[in-house]
Image 1 (tube, rainbow, N blue to C red):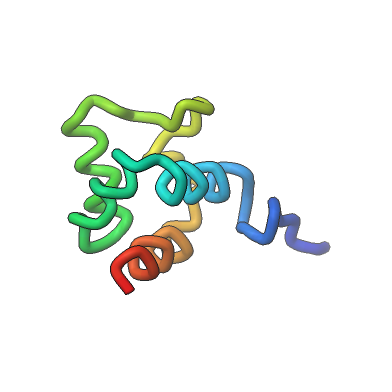
Image 2: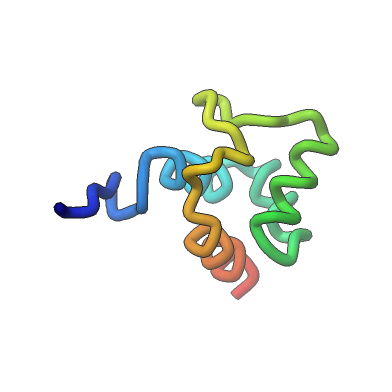
Length: 77
């Protein structure tokens, strides 16, 4: 059995969240203030923003949180 990916990401949901973080100025600035993806998702919940504009939940159980942690690390590099 092979592991399917989406545009090089673990799945569509992870790709979509990373896409929005990297391409939306507001989300980008929120992400810069977060130490990891879990804190980003919590910040989004506090702002009552629970999903991307494409309807992917920021707390979706299928998200590759480790990959999204790396996205946030790269923003700060």
